[in-house]
Image 1 (spheres, rainbow, N blue to C red):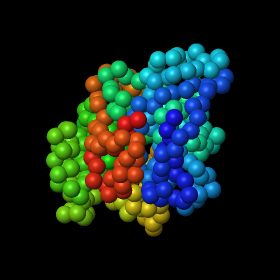
Image 2: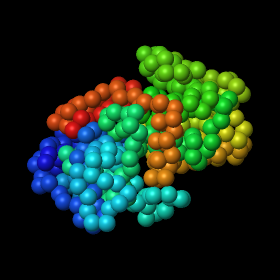
Image 3: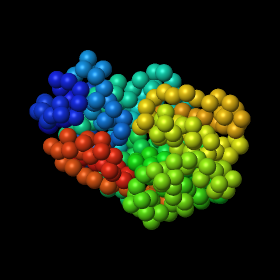
Image 4: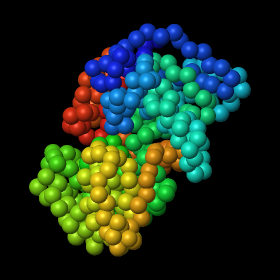
Amino acid sequence: MRALVLDGDAGIENLKLVDKPDPAPGPGQVLVRMKACSLNFRDLATIQNPGIKARLPFSPLSDGCGVIEAVGEGVTRVAIGDRVATLFFQGWLGGEPTTAALSTALGGALDGVAQEKVLLSAEGVSKVPAILSDAEVACLPCAGLTAWRALMTDERVKPGDVVLAQGTGGVSIFALQFAKAAGATVIITSSSDEKLARAKAMGADHLINYRTTPDWARAARAIGGGVDHVIEVGGADTFAQSVQAIRNGGHVAVIGILSGFTKDVNVAAIFGANARIHGITVGSREQFEAMCRAIAANDIHPVVDRRYPLAEAQAAFTAMQAGEHFGKIVLDM
Protein backbone atom coordinates (compact mmCIF):
# COMPACT_ATOMS: atom_id res chain seq x y z
CA MET A 1 0.00 0.00 0.00
CA ARG A 2 1.00 3.64 -0.41
CA ALA A 3 1.38 5.99 2.53
CA LEU A 4 2.08 9.69 2.78
CA VAL A 5 4.95 10.31 5.19
CA LEU A 6 6.96 13.25 6.40
CA ASP A 7 10.61 12.24 6.35
CA GLY A 8 14.00 13.87 6.72
CA ASP A 9 12.82 17.16 8.24
CA ALA A 10 9.75 19.25 8.96
CA GLY A 11 8.10 21.12 6.09
CA ILE A 12 5.67 20.58 3.22
CA GLU A 13 8.53 19.88 0.82
CA ASN A 14 9.48 16.78 2.86
CA LEU A 15 6.16 15.00 2.36
CA LYS A 16 6.53 11.95 0.14
CA LEU A 17 4.70 8.81 -0.91
CA VAL A 18 6.24 5.49 0.15
CA ASP A 19 5.30 1.85 -0.17
CA LYS A 20 4.52 -0.01 3.06
CA PRO A 21 3.38 -3.58 3.70
CA ASP A 22 -0.34 -4.11 4.21
CA PRO A 23 -1.07 -4.34 7.95
CA ALA A 24 -3.24 -7.07 9.51
CA PRO A 25 -5.64 -6.42 12.39
CA GLY A 26 -5.00 -7.97 15.77
CA PRO A 27 -7.55 -8.48 18.55
CA GLY A 28 -9.87 -5.48 18.87
CA GLN A 29 -8.54 -3.84 15.71
CA VAL A 30 -9.94 -3.03 12.26
CA LEU A 31 -8.23 -2.48 8.93
CA VAL A 32 -9.74 0.47 7.08
CA ARG A 33 -9.21 1.05 3.37
CA MET A 34 -9.24 4.84 3.19
CA LYS A 35 -11.35 6.60 0.56
CA ALA A 36 -10.74 10.26 1.40
CA CYS A 37 -8.95 12.40 3.99
CA SER A 38 -9.28 16.08 4.82
CA LEU A 39 -6.74 18.67 5.92
CA ASN A 40 -6.94 20.82 9.02
CA PHE A 41 -4.77 23.77 10.02
CA ARG A 42 -3.54 21.58 12.86
CA ASP A 43 -2.07 19.18 10.27
CA LEU A 44 -0.19 22.02 8.58
CA ALA A 45 1.15 23.22 11.93
CA THR A 46 2.22 19.68 12.83
CA ILE A 47 4.27 18.99 9.72
CA GLN A 48 5.93 22.42 9.97
CA ASN A 49 6.82 22.04 13.64
CA PRO A 50 10.58 21.40 14.03
CA GLY A 51 9.76 19.22 17.04
CA ILE A 52 8.27 16.60 14.74
CA LYS A 53 11.78 15.54 13.67
CA ALA A 54 12.05 13.22 16.65
CA ARG A 55 9.11 11.19 15.31
CA LEU A 56 10.01 10.88 11.65
CA PRO A 57 8.99 9.13 9.47
CA PHE A 58 5.46 10.24 10.34
CA SER A 59 2.12 9.96 8.52
CA PRO A 60 -0.05 13.07 9.01
CA LEU A 61 -3.82 13.72 9.08
CA SER A 62 -6.50 12.76 11.56
CA ASP A 63 -9.66 12.95 9.45
CA GLY A 64 -10.79 10.39 6.97
CA CYS A 65 -13.49 8.14 5.57
CA GLY A 66 -13.00 4.54 4.60
CA VAL A 67 -14.45 1.04 4.42
CA ILE A 68 -13.59 -1.70 6.87
CA GLU A 69 -11.68 -4.37 4.99
CA ALA A 70 -10.80 -6.75 7.83
CA VAL A 71 -11.49 -7.11 11.55
CA GLY A 72 -9.54 -8.70 14.36
CA GLU A 73 -10.68 -11.12 17.00
CA GLY A 74 -13.43 -9.87 19.30
CA VAL A 75 -14.64 -6.99 17.12
CA THR A 76 -18.45 -6.67 17.18
CA ARG A 77 -19.40 -2.96 16.99
CA VAL A 78 -18.42 -2.71 13.31
CA ALA A 79 -18.10 -5.24 10.51
CA ILE A 80 -16.39 -5.80 7.18
CA GLY A 81 -17.96 -3.53 4.57
CA ASP A 82 -19.05 -0.80 7.00
CA ARG A 83 -18.28 2.75 5.88
CA VAL A 84 -16.73 4.63 8.77
CA ALA A 85 -15.03 7.84 9.80
CA THR A 86 -11.79 7.84 11.74
CA LEU A 87 -12.19 9.48 15.15
CA PHE A 88 -9.79 12.29 16.02
CA PHE A 89 -9.25 10.99 19.56
CA GLN A 90 -9.00 7.23 19.50
CA GLY A 91 -9.42 6.99 23.28
CA TRP A 92 -12.09 9.62 24.06
CA LEU A 93 -15.30 7.66 23.77
CA GLY A 94 -17.57 9.74 26.04
CA GLY A 95 -17.78 11.77 29.22
CA GLU A 96 -15.40 14.56 30.17
CA PRO A 97 -11.98 14.84 28.50
CA THR A 98 -9.09 13.34 30.45
CA THR A 99 -5.36 13.70 29.97
CA ALA A 100 -5.18 10.06 28.87
CA ALA A 101 -8.00 10.48 26.32
CA LEU A 102 -6.48 13.65 24.88
CA SER A 103 -3.18 11.86 24.31
CA THR A 104 -4.72 9.58 21.65
CA ALA A 105 -5.03 11.98 18.69
CA LEU A 106 -4.44 10.67 15.20
CA GLY A 107 -1.89 12.59 13.19
CA GLY A 108 -0.30 13.79 16.42
CA ALA A 109 0.42 11.47 19.31
CA LEU A 110 -0.49 8.60 16.96
CA ASP A 111 0.41 8.13 13.32
CA GLY A 112 -2.17 9.63 10.97
CA VAL A 113 -4.52 8.31 8.30
CA ALA A 114 -2.90 9.59 5.09
CA GLN A 115 -2.39 5.96 4.08
CA GLU A 116 -4.28 3.70 1.71
CA LYS A 117 -4.88 1.22 4.55
CA VAL A 118 -4.95 2.14 8.24
CA LEU A 119 -4.96 -0.11 11.29
CA LEU A 120 -7.12 1.32 14.09
CA SER A 121 -8.88 0.29 17.26
CA ALA A 122 -12.42 -0.84 16.58
CA GLU A 123 -13.43 1.72 19.22
CA GLY A 124 -11.79 4.50 17.20
CA VAL A 125 -14.13 4.51 14.21
CA SER A 126 -17.82 5.32 13.77
CA LYS A 127 -20.40 4.58 11.11
CA VAL A 128 -21.46 7.62 9.11
CA PRO A 129 -24.59 9.09 7.43
CA ALA A 130 -25.48 7.51 4.09
CA ILE A 131 -26.43 10.95 2.70
CA LEU A 132 -22.79 12.07 2.69
CA SER A 133 -20.11 11.32 0.12
CA ASP A 134 -16.74 9.93 1.18
CA ALA A 135 -15.17 13.37 0.78
CA GLU A 136 -17.89 14.97 2.92
CA VAL A 137 -17.50 12.36 5.67
CA ALA A 138 -13.75 13.03 5.72
CA CYS A 139 -14.48 16.60 6.84
CA LEU A 140 -16.31 15.61 10.02
CA PRO A 141 -13.88 14.21 12.64
CA CYS A 142 -12.03 17.43 13.55
CA ALA A 143 -13.58 20.54 11.97
CA GLY A 144 -17.17 19.32 12.09
CA LEU A 145 -17.00 17.94 15.61
CA THR A 146 -15.16 21.00 16.95
CA ALA A 147 -17.93 23.32 15.74
CA TRP A 148 -20.62 20.91 16.98
CA ARG A 149 -19.18 20.65 20.47
CA ALA A 150 -18.64 24.43 20.69
CA LEU A 151 -22.23 25.27 19.78
CA MET A 152 -24.41 22.24 20.41
CA THR A 153 -22.87 20.10 23.17
CA ASP A 154 -20.99 22.21 25.70
CA GLU A 155 -23.28 25.11 24.78
CA ARG A 156 -26.83 24.90 23.47
CA VAL A 157 -27.44 27.42 20.71
CA LYS A 158 -31.14 28.28 20.52
CA PRO A 159 -33.33 30.15 18.03
CA GLY A 160 -32.60 33.86 18.13
CA ASP A 161 -29.06 33.55 19.47
CA VAL A 162 -26.35 35.51 17.67
CA VAL A 163 -23.29 33.48 16.62
CA LEU A 164 -20.10 34.99 15.21
CA ALA A 165 -17.70 32.75 13.28
CA GLN A 166 -14.28 34.04 12.35
CA GLY A 167 -13.25 33.41 8.77
CA THR A 168 -14.45 30.83 6.29
CA GLY A 169 -12.31 27.81 7.08
CA GLY A 170 -13.62 24.38 7.97
CA VAL A 171 -14.67 24.98 11.59
CA SER A 172 -16.31 28.34 10.88
CA ILE A 173 -18.33 27.06 7.91
CA PHE A 174 -19.54 24.10 9.96
CA ALA A 175 -20.48 26.57 12.71
CA LEU A 176 -22.50 28.57 10.17
CA GLN A 177 -24.36 25.43 9.09
CA PHE A 178 -25.08 24.15 12.62
CA ALA A 179 -26.09 27.58 13.93
CA LYS A 180 -28.51 28.19 11.05
CA ALA A 181 -30.03 24.74 11.54
CA ALA A 182 -30.65 25.74 15.18
CA GLY A 183 -32.38 28.97 14.16
CA ALA A 184 -29.58 31.36 15.17
CA THR A 185 -28.48 34.61 13.55
CA VAL A 186 -24.95 34.25 12.15
CA ILE A 187 -22.20 36.82 11.62
CA ILE A 188 -19.23 35.86 9.45
CA THR A 189 -15.95 37.78 9.35
CA SER A 190 -13.42 37.57 6.53
CA SER A 191 -10.90 39.71 4.66
CA SER A 192 -12.40 38.54 1.34
CA ASP A 193 -15.62 40.00 -0.03
CA GLU A 194 -15.85 37.02 -2.38
CA LYS A 195 -15.81 34.59 0.54
CA LEU A 196 -18.31 36.72 2.44
CA ALA A 197 -20.63 36.52 -0.56
CA ARG A 198 -20.35 32.73 -0.53
CA ALA A 199 -21.14 32.69 3.18
CA LYS A 200 -24.18 34.88 2.57
CA ALA A 201 -25.39 32.43 -0.08
CA MET A 202 -25.20 29.72 2.62
CA GLY A 203 -27.40 31.72 4.97
CA ALA A 204 -25.06 34.07 6.86
CA ASP A 205 -27.12 37.01 8.11
CA HIS A 206 -24.39 39.62 8.64
CA LEU A 207 -21.00 40.01 6.98
CA ILE A 208 -17.97 41.93 8.28
CA ASN A 209 -14.80 42.46 6.26
CA TYR A 210 -12.19 42.91 8.98
CA ARG A 211 -9.76 44.57 6.54
CA THR A 212 -12.15 47.42 5.85
CA THR A 213 -13.67 47.27 9.35
CA PRO A 214 -10.71 46.63 11.69
CA ASP A 215 -12.87 47.33 14.77
CA TRP A 216 -15.09 44.40 13.87
CA ALA A 217 -16.01 43.77 17.50
CA ARG A 218 -17.87 47.08 17.67
CA ALA A 219 -19.70 46.27 14.42
CA ALA A 220 -20.64 42.81 15.70
CA ARG A 221 -21.79 44.09 19.09
CA ALA A 222 -24.12 46.54 17.38
CA ILE A 223 -26.05 43.57 15.99
CA GLY A 224 -28.66 42.62 18.58
CA GLY A 225 -26.77 44.21 21.47
CA GLY A 226 -23.90 41.73 21.49
CA VAL A 227 -22.93 38.26 20.37
CA ASP A 228 -24.04 35.16 22.31
CA HIS A 229 -21.37 32.80 20.95
CA VAL A 230 -18.04 33.49 19.24
CA ILE A 231 -16.16 30.80 17.32
CA GLU A 232 -12.66 32.05 18.10
CA VAL A 233 -10.20 30.52 15.63
CA GLY A 234 -7.84 33.46 15.17
CA GLY A 235 -5.87 33.13 18.37
CA ALA A 236 -3.70 35.82 19.90
CA ASP A 237 -4.60 38.65 17.52
CA THR A 238 -8.38 38.19 17.63
CA PHE A 239 -9.17 37.05 21.18
CA ALA A 240 -9.44 40.54 22.66
CA GLN A 241 -11.99 41.62 20.05
CA SER A 242 -13.95 38.41 20.57
CA VAL A 243 -14.39 39.33 24.23
CA GLN A 244 -15.40 42.86 23.23
CA ALA A 245 -18.01 41.54 20.79
CA ILE A 246 -20.02 39.42 23.23
CA ARG A 247 -23.03 40.48 25.24
CA ASN A 248 -22.87 40.42 29.02
CA GLY A 249 -22.52 36.74 29.90
CA GLY A 250 -21.64 35.77 26.34
CA HIS A 251 -19.56 32.75 25.35
CA VAL A 252 -16.21 32.60 23.54
CA ALA A 253 -15.22 29.14 22.26
CA VAL A 254 -11.42 29.24 21.96
CA ILE A 255 -10.50 26.86 19.15
CA GLY A 256 -7.71 28.08 16.89
CA ILE A 257 -4.25 29.61 16.84
CA LEU A 258 -4.08 31.05 13.32
CA SER A 259 -2.42 34.26 14.53
CA GLY A 260 -0.34 32.77 17.32
CA PHE A 261 -0.51 31.44 20.86
CA THR A 262 0.01 34.27 23.29
CA LYS A 263 -0.62 37.98 23.73
CA ASP A 264 -1.54 40.32 26.58
CA VAL A 265 -5.01 39.52 27.93
CA ASN A 266 -7.32 42.19 29.36
CA VAL A 267 -8.55 40.30 32.38
CA ALA A 268 -10.82 43.18 33.40
CA ALA A 269 -12.65 42.94 30.08
CA ILE A 270 -13.30 39.24 30.70
CA PHE A 271 -14.78 39.58 34.18
CA GLY A 272 -16.44 42.88 33.32
CA ALA A 273 -18.39 41.14 30.57
CA ASN A 274 -19.04 38.08 32.76
CA ALA A 275 -17.58 36.24 29.79
CA ARG A 276 -17.59 32.46 29.58
CA ILE A 277 -14.27 31.46 27.98
CA HIS A 278 -14.20 27.85 26.91
CA GLY A 279 -11.33 25.92 25.34
CA ILE A 280 -12.45 23.37 22.75
CA THR A 281 -10.28 20.44 21.64
CA VAL A 282 -12.46 18.53 19.15
CA GLY A 283 -14.72 16.03 21.00
CA SER A 284 -15.62 12.47 21.93
CA ARG A 285 -17.07 9.55 19.97
CA GLU A 286 -20.39 10.03 21.74
CA GLN A 287 -20.50 13.66 20.56
CA PHE A 288 -19.44 12.66 17.04
CA GLU A 289 -22.30 10.20 16.72
CA ALA A 290 -24.83 12.76 18.01
CA MET A 291 -23.52 15.20 15.38
CA CYS A 292 -23.94 12.61 12.63
CA ARG A 293 -27.57 12.04 13.62
CA ALA A 294 -28.22 15.78 13.43
CA ILE A 295 -26.46 16.03 10.06
CA ALA A 296 -28.65 13.28 8.63
CA ALA A 297 -31.85 14.75 10.10
CA ASN A 298 -31.12 18.23 8.76
CA ASP A 299 -29.53 17.18 5.44
CA ILE A 300 -26.35 19.14 6.17
CA HIS A 301 -23.50 18.68 3.70
CA PRO A 302 -19.93 19.74 4.48
CA VAL A 303 -18.43 22.26 2.06
CA VAL A 304 -15.60 20.63 0.09
CA ASP A 305 -13.81 23.46 -1.71
CA ARG A 306 -10.80 21.69 -3.23
CA ARG A 307 -9.84 18.08 -3.91
CA TYR A 308 -6.43 16.62 -4.71
CA PRO A 309 -5.19 13.08 -5.32
CA LEU A 310 -2.96 11.65 -2.61
CA ALA A 311 0.08 12.07 -4.88
CA GLU A 312 -0.50 15.85 -4.85
CA ALA A 313 -0.54 16.22 -1.07
CA GLN A 314 2.19 18.86 -1.19
CA ALA A 315 -0.02 21.02 -3.42
CA ALA A 316 -2.96 20.52 -1.04
CA PHE A 317 -0.92 21.67 1.96
CA THR A 318 0.43 24.62 -0.02
CA ALA A 319 -3.14 25.66 -0.82
CA MET A 320 -4.04 25.46 2.86
CA GLN A 321 -1.02 27.55 3.78
CA ALA A 322 -2.12 30.22 1.29
CA GLY A 323 -5.51 30.39 3.02
CA GLU A 324 -7.47 30.71 -0.20
CA HIS A 325 -9.90 27.86 0.48
CA PHE A 326 -13.52 28.15 1.64
CA GLY A 327 -14.53 25.24 3.82
CA LYS A 328 -12.44 22.12 3.44
CA ILE A 329 -9.57 20.68 1.39
CA VAL A 330 -9.76 16.93 0.71
CA LEU A 331 -7.30 14.28 -0.49
CA ASP A 332 -8.85 11.50 -2.58
CA MET A 333 -7.20 8.19 -1.82
